[in-house]
Image (cartoon, rainbow, N blue to C red):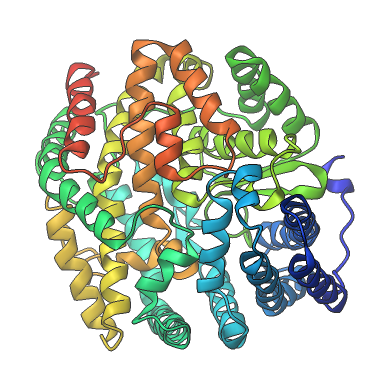
Length: 563
């Protein structure tokens, strides 16, 4: 079914809550492992129907945040989703208390029971009102950010549409683009500060009610992290700061020299070549046709996937006023349909959408067609889900010429550079958030001071050169995950470590790399991050020396593939 033909109806919350109570009773009464497994599977399917309605509303809302109808529907789910989540957790409590619990691990894999335990630790009816408030705050941030229009080049532009100007070969144009963006954030400084203050206080109150010291602790359950915790993440961040940042300083310096920039400032860091950054082929249909060819030639599975996506209008990628910023993939379970949302701006990042978000969508497409996997376990936790997307960026490399033509070598180089450089920024975001929730009384200025201190730790090469907004340490406020998805960002770093290994594997033997990737994707959410890495024969980054062992060969490849 085409997206435009998918009907939407606001769900009956009372009926859903009653259904959840019945599932909980059925779980308590289940007298065999088989009966208990059936309750788990059936409740998961029922929640999939609710998710379909919620995700349809969210897609329509993010496609036009100004539409009052979809604003109202988004507000409805902001207010009612926490109650549904709490009701599902009551089902989990009943399942976890059943003596036949071990049958679920045998039936559905090792993440099923730990995932329910995490949910029980993270969700409770006592915090439903606070969760509703948190959803509202997130939506207010999305509207404030997504509604941004700035003046530049005689035009009214959205924030994503500033992208090409930030990569201009004219330093004055680059600076003007960053200043235009900064002007919007400075003009709304009090609003962004207040929304973050409300976010921190709200989430820490939730954590206190649930028995945690602060939200940084609760987040590990909320993010469904299985098999590792804060200490492993700290070890990983420390390795990045110690072993990767020096490599990155060399890469950034070489890149500036290559671009002919003698004293690079923050506004210059997006320029990678003296004749301009790689530019993808222009035209929506041209790119979509190239994507279809690419995925048809990659494998039979990806061929069927891209046909389904394009034939059913499951892309919305063009930037326009009122559209939310960023990009995402979501799933519509009732239609077994992934949906890809993005904001193209005629930069290389547009191609990343056709690979990154398509990687998410491909795994979702496969899982939706595997009826043995319950809806709850179709997708793994986020650090694993991001492997699907980031690895796909590299595994499609043999076809990038369809999208970049003569600029393909430039794209390959900058893609590898930026993937490695990202590790430092991602770790910076994660450490910043830990500090924010562990020290909730910090003032807005003190928060910015922490960010500037972490900039020196993780990105010591940056010179803001008096740039507004960024120069005062507020640049973190444009990172939507910090407001909308706290503690998500480190997931990108963990998945990058896996994706970089797929990159190296693909360079050595693309067929072998693809088969490993496909095997990992087919697991869905039935295995943890460390188990999924083991499935594909990959290292995990929690042991001392592991990060360096991955980063050094990538840095060597970068040094040997200068353009």
